[in-house]
Length: 510
Image (cartoon, rainbow, N blue to C red; front, side, top):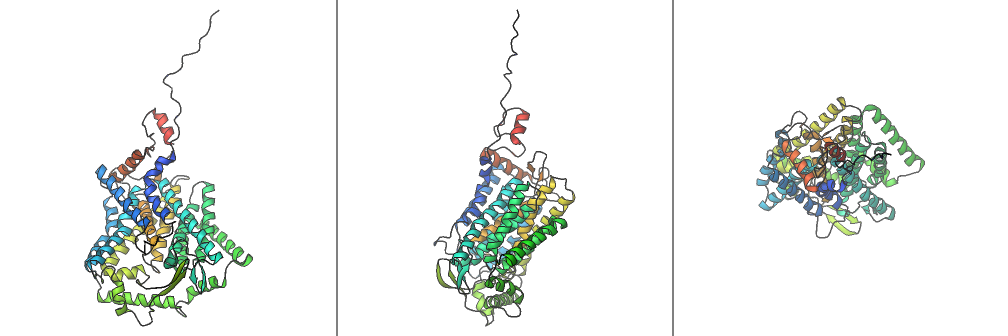
């Protein structure tokens, strides 16, 4: 009787590759994510309205990006991207030389370079693909949810900033001296959530994003910020139009129905809130003192520009020239109180209009350079959204356009609209630099196109930078080097250790 032996075991077989942990992949983005995370903390007394922890981290982000560029010895940006991001430097350098003092000129130059040049470029280069982009967008939503919850609690308990004699204004952790901080953060959260909800990602993510957007409307209303309301409405309208007419009508109908139920059925809303909304259309007929002060400072900024049309009065010189150009209707300051702070008369140190501030301090040269950079970003971002939608395949390109494109365009439109009612200042200003980096990644580096395995590729061939601004050689090296340094899988689908067969490496990448 013969006995059949089992076949010998295949010693070359390897166990199936395990999916890499997501934590190593997050490591390169942690410095960028730390900037919005630190804004969840209340400002310390040592800040004094100056640089805070988020600003310090933004400097570390720039240094980290610069070290990567030096290490790999590659050109970071294509020529068009470098021109768009570096255009503001021309006006800033001329205005810094004409400042009232060298100290003020250097301080102003450093602040403008941080917000509009260095940090946006670093964020742009450190974002590797669509997953990094959406992660950063969700961090905006999370920060807005935290600050919004604190703001609603302040309104309900009467512990907010003072508004019309009552401590009901929602300001979050920013305090009464920065009443626009929470309104800005919550507005960014609404815009990001709307863009994520209008995308083509998984249904549960879109439902979650839509719920976050609706919930954040409550603290946004309780901030009593008319400028934030207007900018949010404009940005969301642009997002809806870019997403498609059918979806725009559906979302508009849902928002209208929710508003009717909340205001008409449940009685949500107060007399002060209704008065604040109606005052938007009365700024010309019967303006309050805050509107009068704003008009007076606008007139002062225009008068400064007429005297110094090309280069302005110099960086950080608006307060010194204000009294000599402002009309008599301007008050000595605004009253701030509440949210744990004592009464304080806060001086009016800026015209509360970014375009007029740049025109007054940097002249026509600075305004054309700075606003030209912003408009170029917006034009490239909108152009890519429309071109991506036109050439979309179901479930592929539309995913990038639906999420990244709508979020980038919405944030940029919000900021450019709000600059008509506000300027840079306060700890939340660092988020402006981050959103410019987000918009720049989508507009200048191609924004990425999803591949068949769901991983986002970042544009054209090495050294490219064609019509839509494909990824350059230096940026690809940064993305690969950052992934390798963190021990994560490379976006192309390789396992971090490089071992195993081709099928195993592809499985690990997926």
